[in-house]
View 1 (cartoon, rainbow, N blue to C red):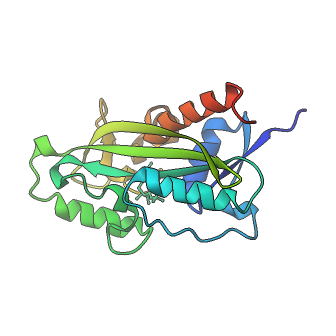
View 2: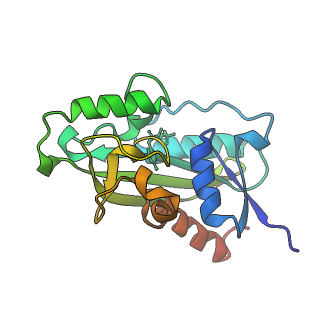
Amino acid sequence: MQALTPLIIATRNPHKTMEIREMIATQYEVLDATNFSDWPEVEETGTTFLENATLKAVAISQCVDGIVLADDSGLIVDGLDGAPGVWSSSYGGEEGNHAKNNQRLLLEMTDVPEAKRSARFACTMVLAQGGRVLADFQGMVEGRILHDLSGVEGFGYDPLFAPLGYDRSFAELGSEIKNTLSHRAAALQQVIAWLSSGNPL
Ligand code: IMP
């Protein structure tokens, strides 16, 4: 059997790796921070998804051989003027604490009228190699913010986000459906098309 081409995901978030792996496991060997001992901490100091994804892709690709894929993503809520946006991961006051993030989101949404509960997940993916950016890609999924947490699958804001056309949250719908609709899936499809069209590999 032919060995799969490695694709290194610039993340310490096991959920992102898992989703990406589920979507492309037959085509690529998906690696992340857990496969490397000298993986640097990258500070996300940018003010856009593109800036942060670029910071991660460039920094990690300087330390490992091969193509690196960085994903920077977040939730944009209309009734909150676009918050939490780029700061989705620390919205509740503690980096990566999903329970606190969801708690704050529900609190901020208390007086937001139904029509303003529209929201979207956005994902920017950047490919880099040897410290050089190769390309960037954007994905988006429209939906709305629910009034209560529901479902146990996925991660982050999944229990509060119902994609357009569904009454259930991503956390209820599960990865099989999420991976056909999500912002990450939309960006990743473009990445795979780009890589398989003969670009750098
Ligand atoms: P990043 O690591 O800076 O890209 O932070 C992404 C943050 O956005 C996560 O910690 C989550 O809070 C949120 N997020 C991004 N993608 C998703 C998703 O697919 N489901 C739920 N929350 C997400």
